[in-house]
Length: 126
Image 1 (cartoon, rainbow, N blue to C red):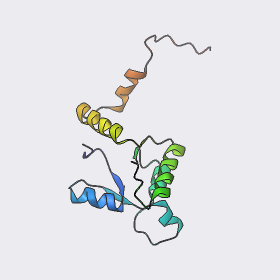
Image 2 (cartoon, rainbow, N blue to C red; image 1 turned 60 degrees about the vertical axis):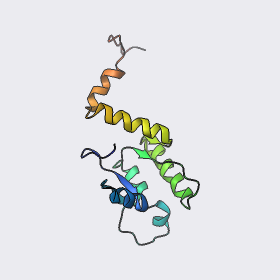
Image 3 (cartoon, one colour; image 1 turned 180 degrees about the vertical axis):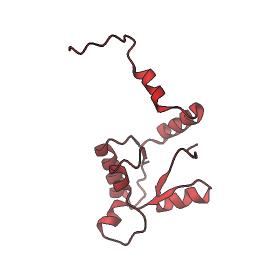
Image 4 (cartoon, helix red, strand yellow; image 1 turned 45 degrees about the horizontal axis):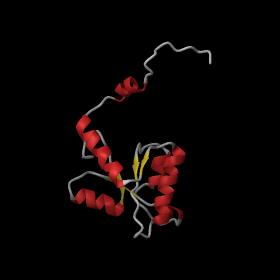
């Protein structure tokens, strides 16, 4: 569903490896705490790419059986603070993927059609 030449996926190391093992191209990023601990890294931190808006949508699903609870929090926090859309619910992600698959290649400018009020007489006076 998210496998498209128009989309570039970024994922932390284990997720990126899983995607790549299933023939889904993904660029690897590292956790923020690994960066803060100044561990050697060959990949950029996810939070930096979010802050720079290189990443345009963050999907961060809850996983309470992980040692990366704080890192996941930081990724969500950076997304919210940077104004990057954030999906955190599996069902919503599934519906979003189905909608993308159904619509196909939609030009973003077409979205203005749906947000334009029915009365086109706008006054600059409030």
